[in-house]
Length: 199
Length: 199
DNA sequence: GTCTATAGCACGATAGAC
DNA sequence: GTCTATCGTGCTATAGAC
Image (tube, rainbow over all chains, first blue to last red; front, side, top):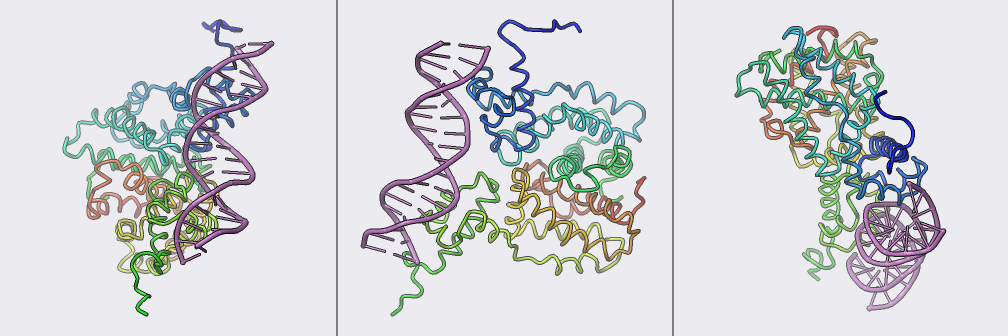
């Protein structure tokens, strides 16, 4: 509790309420369909206040998805403990983040990326530069194969995210991390370190 | 009376032009973001004409995605020729359909399913009842495992579709069907017929 | 069959009162 | 810090003239 509780100058917790409502609404409807008015209603404040605190809708979205989780911290955990379990551990780490409250920001980004060009670019650059490169760089793979391996991992992870968090297809939507790590982990493992032409 | 093959005003195939424009626009922007006005502009007709031919926007969308490809015809081809190559053949069949012109309707459905509840339901029901069940029913699997196997296949195929057609992540976006069949095929194969807990 | 005009609504954003 | 009022825009959908 290093932070002082109670009121802070110029920033009462109305701001936090708006941010939380924005995260939830963006996650549920995507950038375009989530209106400032709906976010304000969910937060129990006036729509004008949202603009007052965050400026434009795009700025609010950026504040919403400026994730409180740094991939640079997670990647070492994925890589530690043996090259042969990287796939399973990657799935577990992914689920741990996305199943947690902060995961709603990620869902918002994924949902928005589908119907919105600049959010798609945001997601793609984040994936490539922050996540895939980090993992793949430390496995000393054939450099010529790295882009394909990374993209294949992205297809499986993105598909898992879509089905579990957006489309909510059962039983994947409610399956345990253990089940998913056991079934999907080997796929990631093969995409990363296995042969690229046969199982 | 040589009136029936007139190219421009008084055009009989205006309807087809609208349908084609709608397919392209829905595929590119999704249901919500694709406006009737934009579709009409792309087709070179008046927006009111779109309503005249197709009624509401939702009815137009349904006409757009009422696909000219019947899964019942494709599934036997996937299953024929040996149980061990089902995975690879499923990937090949999928790509053949989605890379073709009629695939734009599928892209439209996928894109819309993310930011729109009733289209998501449309897609989910189509997946479950038309595609997954058909494939999975004919491989005499443990009935208890069928839902999970089907959903796992869905994650990989949906992720492939997302990255190749929506996010356009390279090199998956432009990879050859051969490459993708060789790399992703084994994943599908394992989800369908392999052990569910190890690679 | 085709188009003009417009009703009716929701949105993002701003100005300015309290 | 919070809210009322409103501007300008874009949308679906309809009514009705040619």
